[in-house]
Image: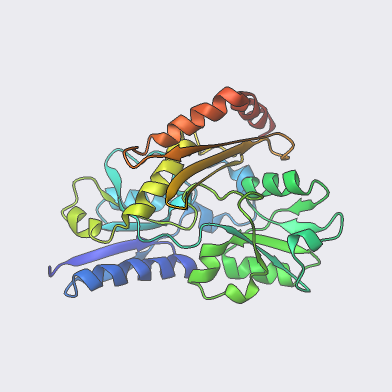
Length: 308
């Protein structure tokens, strides 16, 4: 196919790297494509002096990209999947998910300390309510502080500070070649990832003429896994700031979907796991969410909402 395609992206190094990944995959299938990129600033790129939990905006890193798609200013929007709202605008779809990168969270420290080596009262930086809650559930003695900015900025802020540790997603560091900063990949029994963490979402208009072309670079296993995780999130109106996590993993050929919800300080945690059959659709995530709801999640959600 010989066609011009405009990809919309945020301007951070990570966003541009993810766009390069998508561009490369498309060109491998169709070398004659004329692919251009358009950098679009989102609200999340502009508001850097307020904690994410205080902004309370569901489309913080995506809305401007989606608007450009709907206005036909771009043909594709490339997102970190975990940034997306739980429901697409009605005229947009997620057409493909390339193979997922490492979905876990990692610990960055000074003096080669691991999470368990930290002294009592150590100060850890993260902008995520999910990471904050799971850290406090595991180590209630820790002091958690907010940190904003792109990956490089957060690392620099941390290294120039008196803080003891920083939590980031493994995928971003790997894609940017910054693995040297990783001291420890945090066990998901301690810190379960955000739904769809490590995955890139390729969003297009529902009636786009490049739908079939984009779907050629879809990685089915990754796509189904993150869609199940997102279905779990959606049940709880996942745009809220409650600490919600989910991960679909394969163990000895069997797939399991694990979900977790907690209150903001991690003192109340509900966790459940269900097996996934080959015949199950994405709504198996809803089944897991209902299981956790029966365990008492509604009270935790109400408590979190009152604290926001």
